[in-house]
Length: 162
Image 1 (spheres, one colour):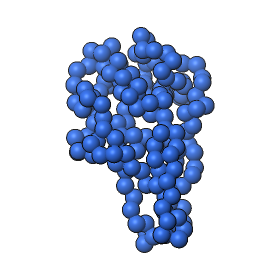
Image 2 (tube, rainbow, N blue to C red; image 1 turned 30 degrees about the vertical axis):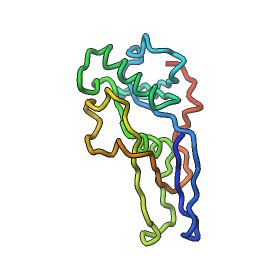
Image 3 (cartoon, rainbow, N blue to C red; image 1 turned 180 degrees about the horizontal axis):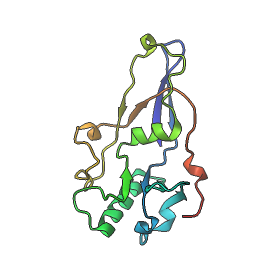
């Protein structure tokens, strides 16, 4: 779950909503997850011939990182993200990409009070991965402020073969 904050039309009220969140990454070879518990993820083979053609989705952030660690171990990668894995390490960015809740629609710049995304801590052992920025943001509690309702990807519908 992730908490979304949205300022109401009056500008004085703030609405919060806890919404489902499904962490994900892309893989070049689904076989890299061989040996990782199959009931811990869903996957979908994407159309086209691009290298990162497997979308892998999890129900928890911890399981997402466990799978990334498994892939690093299988590929023998130490200290970096394996090149077979396309990883977005920020849960706020993943949520916004997944839901499309980045639209400001008719909101004018002057009405925008704040628009921030701050992520949860990354589990120990993952801070040395190449794609994780070392900015200090990862020690803050999760906060997402966003506007919009367009859905781009619904992880609950991923039941396709891999």
